[in-house]
Image (cartoon, rainbow, N blue to C red; front, side):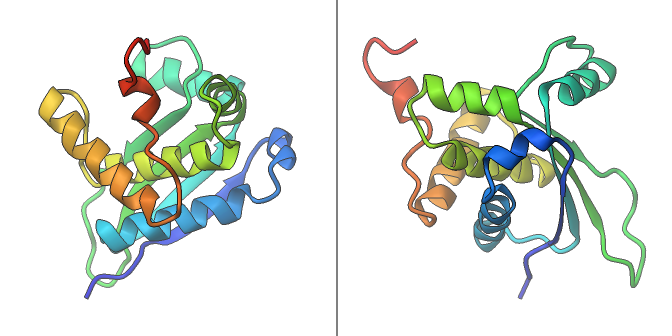
Length: 162
């Protein structure tokens, strides 16, 4: 039976002091995701700010603006006896908080969603096509429901929603 990955959480911005349960939230979210999509190894999750994520987005994706979450799946081969590095997930405080306010949802619920979203990217899930997006969103909804978090995509599907 697979186990949950080891999770290294780093709070890299003092802005996260506004959400003292942020680390607890991402740990619960990754654990819930691992129950539905198990993976052995290590995940690094950084709670940062818009300036840091903008630099990463620019340097790695050629997009010179902040985003809510970035995932960097590890590409190193697995070595015998050494836990696999699954990759890194980075979440930006200001973008996350702004989106949560715009969507009228709790910041920690949105944080849990982005942690799950980032984790699934590390495992190879994507949303580049409609069918990929449907599968990934279904997995996210299922995982988040186990945490008592409402469908994060419901707002986008309401009639007249942008």
